[in-house]
Amino acid sequence: MSVRRGVYLSLLAAAMLWLAVPTAWAVDRLEEFNKAKRTLVQQLHSKQPSVRADALVRLQEYPIADAVKFAQAALADEEGEVYEAARSTLLKMSGNQEVCDTLLASVRKNINRKDDAQYAAPMLAVLLSSTLPSVQRETNEFLEKLCASKNGVGVAVGLADDLGQHHAATDVVPLERLSKTTIFADHFGIRRAVVQALTRIRTKEAIGALIELMPKVGGEAQADAVEYLSQLTGQVFGMEAPAWKRWWGDVEATFTYPTRIAPAPYRSVANNTAGSYYGMPLFAERLVFVLDTSGSMTGPRLAAAKRELVRAIASLPPHTQFSIIIFNGTVTTWQKELVPATANWKDLAAHYVTVQEAHSETATYDALETALRFDTEAIYLLSDGAPRGGKIQAPVDIIAAITEANRTRRISIYTIGVGAGVPGSPLDSFLKTLAEQNLGLYRRVDG
Image 1: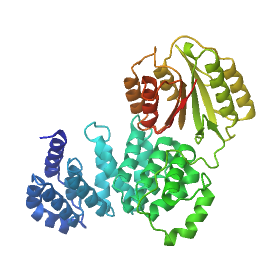
Image 2 (image 1 turned 180 degrees about the vertical axis):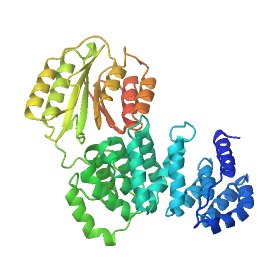
Image 3 (image 1 turned 90 degrees about the vertical axis):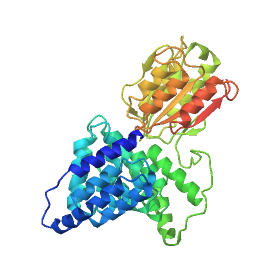
Image 4 (image 1 turned 45 degrees about the horizontal axis):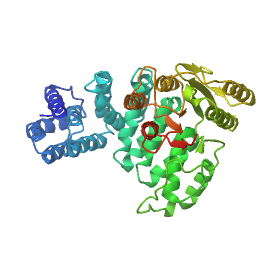
């Protein structure tokens, strides 16, 4: 028996023992449910996924707390057919106050339990789908309190991911509701997860929602929307949200999805971006530059890298914020908080960059770890050598650690390899994989 199947049966057993105090409204349904319970329990214990799924569909006839417990338990079932049936059943019940109260109480009770927290996302998705104003209000309040806790943002990001993975039109509304919460405004990872979820739902409603969100998400998340919409529609409005909105108003009624989306390189849509760095567009509104000044960068190589960085900083629009990290055997941060890209700060940054000199080793992991401490959307890492020194030195371990730390942050990590050797060399592969696994791009630079 698999671990997840064991969890499912344990939750199912708990549901069988759980007794609700029925309201007057639910008495008749409770009696009907009690008559059907024995058969339903037998079906839910079946080894055949289709039988378990059919039993869950039958539960839709009983929108009461007792039935909810069985559907909740099935969210732990490892069979996709059964999981989807459980989720669909709960969605069908989401207009019922007692059902939603039961779900929210369960989420509150179990959110900090390691074995149960993973099932919070589908239950929260159901609650966000409810048409009941009281449920929407209580769910929003819960999410706001949750995101103040250590793992709360991760749960909210998982919620957006869960809403996107079903490719269902019914999930557009809860994503829109999530986008109207304060946690959406406060956390870049949540904003980007909502945008990414909407790009997976092939409905007109999802397109309209994406276009409406563009001015609210900005930066890298807006670039995600533009990338998807441009490939989907063939339009080239770039980051101009008003132009997208006007176009959609003209074509929405007659728009039909193409049979396939035209492939294009990631981040190929650079229209209307104010700056670039080694040919990569600077979409982010909050970004950190990380410059390798190890011994191997001595001479023309470092001089060229400093010129390019100064040029990139000069191209930043005033509404962006940035900082700089210099690393060799140690890591030095120019400003501990991001600063606005005003003329004065740009001048100070340019001076800071131009006086840098090359020293010793290449503590790449330490530099990236420091960059992740910033409230940023993008990190631009330039290096010319394999990691050497620092807390972690093996490239594969650095990639694993940074990618895990960035799982819910959703920061784009762009990498530039200076003199990285032939394609497939250790440095080339390290920087390329790091970017690919962290929503970024990799550029090779001769030097």
